[in-house]
Amino acid sequence: MKLRPDQVTFHPRSHADPTSRVFFWEGNLYRGVSRSQAAFFLDLFTRRIIQDLIERKLIIGTELTNLELDGYPLVLKHDTVPFVSYCFEWCGEMLKAAALFVLHFERNLRPHGLTLRDGHPWNVLFIGPSPIWVDIGSLMTAGDHELRWGAKGQFDSYFTRSLKIMAAGHPRIAHLLLQDRYVGILQSEADAIIGIRSAKQISEKLIPSRLRPALRSAVKSVRATMTLRGTNNAPKYLRSGLREIERIRLPRPVTTWSHRDSAEFPAFTTTENWTPKHRTLSEIITRAKPGSVLDVGSHRGWYSQLAAREGASVVSFDVDEPSVTKQFHDASAHRLHILPVLMDIRKTIPGMQPSTIPIAAVDRFRCDMVLALALVHDLFFKQAMDFETIVSVLTAFARRWLVVEFIGTEDPSVREFLGERIEWYDLDKFTSVLKSKYRQVTQFPSDDVHRWVLFCEK
Image (cartoon, rainbow, N blue to C red; front, side, top):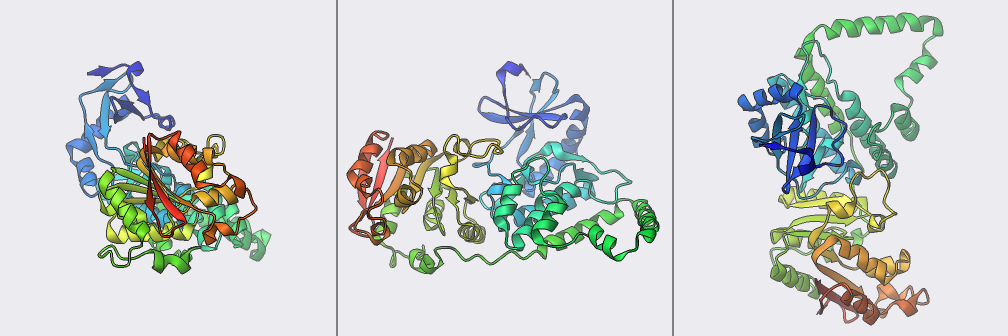
């Protein structure tokens, strides 16, 4: 069956690769492969290389179709992931896990005579806490003359230098620089941030200028000799890359709310230490049975874990990187379908999100149910957001339900803000705004008489 271009919707990020194009048709995701590459990929399927990589969970599920598209005689069908996240939204441990995954993937391609054309994290997505490679178009034949992995420069620009900057205690700078989709982080930038001189700077200081030309010539000669040894050294080189990443030690996470972690994170095996809020959320989630849940301002992610243990695919937002890191470790350890991301809900407001984001957060993280617990008072007083804005932003992510907690003025968490816009902060006013968006708003108990959980249904 041949498709016309006007029947499909091309993926907004699929425009740079001349050999393939990703598109949507009838709700499914496809990749059109150009005439020059069609035979190459057909051969990979014939030899069951693609199937083997899929079975080992190295590459996204992909299958052959009988479709064609103008300019693309071969069309492949891809599985999709529940949530699309970008590298600058990952905590350092997630970036490190993705880096190790890419090196492991490249190492597994070598026995098949293949390599990755790209070494950047934009082709990696997470399914829960597990990374997966999604760009099958990046596979290519490894040249016999190749000593080093051709994409190592990209890998260092996005992974190695970012992780070293994070390890030096500057994660915010690394996350900002990672937003550059075309350059990544330059070595000079990493040196300036970390405070380490580059090898070139050191040599210029220690080696007399009259000896530098001879030294450069000797280095080129050594590299040329090594290049002739072929690909036999590639696995060794990849092993050294793995060691380099593994040796990077990121700071141990201590959350802003660490002093409350044990009290607010009871075991899931018993309800003995559960508070009324824990029981309320358990009742709501069990009754509604959402297929997907977004937990905004999730902290350590107890409610994210609750939803995941009830079978939901979960994404959690928090601005505190140590909290996101702990969630990532917990999700990995317990094999929970949770994707924790660094996200400030304010930056999802139209006009507020960075222009570098290819697809808006609201289009990537919309879920059946949104949880916003112990969050409204913070957004209202500290971030100067009014009720209409708060409800509108949260509602944009909620397909069916919003579960939001309101903390009254008698609660110690709010009492400190008395006098600061306090006349506008009222449960009835907040409920009125909710009722303008939802057909039904039901009030449930929380942990205190001055706290309420509001279950909103569209």
